[in-house]
Amino acid sequence: MPKILKTISDVRDFTSLYSLINRRIGFVPTMGALHEGHLELGKKARNECDCLIYSIFVNPIQFGPKEDLDKYPRDIKDDLEKLDSIGTDAVFIPDNSAMYPNGFNSFVDIGEIGNILCGKSRPGHFRGVATVVTKLFNIVCCDQAYFGKKDYQQYIIIKKMVRDLNIPVEIIGADTVREKDGLAMSSRNAYLSKEERISATVLYKALNYAKDNFLNFESKDGLISKTIEFIKREKSANIDYVEIRNTADLSDVQSLKKGKFVLLLAVRFGNARLIDNIALN
Ligand code: AMP
Image (cartoon, rainbow, N blue to C red; front, top):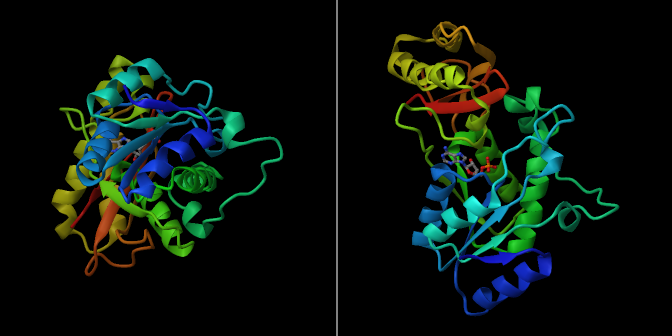
């Protein structure tokens, strides 16, 4: 079983031994309720580093007041078994007071990129993510940290933050792991009813529709409306956004003639807000 680290000094004691002898530490931050998508990140780290550390922490400051913080799925016993199965060395499971002691009041401001896409309907979300990731990097002192491209905006924000603030961690992105029918694995899929779970398969089909038809469109608006039409065939789909952005930095796209683009979407099915994306070219 992985060694369970509860306090910040537990982590420091554990990682300092590895740093002392110049061993590479790979780190995978998560909120638990682990699935194959989370484990793929660790397997990649396992191959590339000498030591593999996960964190499991449902970070309260990245949830809005009306979001699912209390309902977020938690199953530490199952998580530990899964982490053991891929040879995890240690897992940091702090409680809220270790991460946010009384008087905590310093945040990482990541600017406008935190206000677009998911940031529009989740104000403050990425500020909370950037803050907790910075804290975790300062605690774990890893060499490489692994993030899923399923949360593409998060991945780009963390890469930018690390560059802007000269944080000495290499950010590695990993492709989205999907169920057999294409639905991106997510801890929040647990919120879907049987019918919603079937309806949600429209997302990956819509992403592929957009990718396959990309060359037929010169303007992004045409491709976006067709993709929205595609998703709306599922009556239970409630679209938050469908957008096309430049792949490298999520900046606005003027024309589809030149550049590399990603289509990103967020769609609600009942209580589950699902996100996904696809590289168009
Ligand atoms: P979370 O527990 O949702 O905060 O996710 C922890 C990490 O796992 C993040 O870097 C996510 O992007 C990544 N992740 C979540 N789902 C997937 C997936 N289906 N494929 C690849 N990575 C994922």
